[in-house]
Amino acid sequence: MNRAIQTALCTIALAQFLKIPLAKRKTKKWDWSLFFETGGMPSSHSAGVASLATYVALKKGVHSIDFALAAIFGLIVMYDAQGVRHQTGELAIRVNELTEEIEKIKGAHDDGKLDRKEELLRERLGHQPIEVIGGAFLGIVTGGLSYVITRKRSL
Image: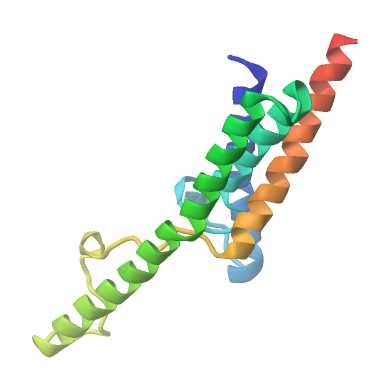
């Protein structure tokens, strides 16, 4: 596997792992399932594409077609993670609230939460802008570190 792909995949895994201690700071609980969830800080989508673009820029130069492809691909992914996917998550929240209201109206005598979690839509799909920026920053750092490590090994 080439170094650019290794860098991006390792950065995605690192971003997913970092969600766990960052969430613990907020909730005071360890939630290891966050490693497999979408959404949250930092954006692994942004981190992966930013690390790829950074590594390619340093290896091939910012004037290369390779960098142009990585950068445009990265911008599209980050826009999608923050825009479309975030809006989908917001829509899922509204649909879940509506579903719970319908259950209340139908006469459910509980706390308003559905017992059947599989019927609720996933709400954590996209990212807030700060999560995308955090992921991009992480990606730039890891892409740069990967390039420096590779370069030192070849000297």
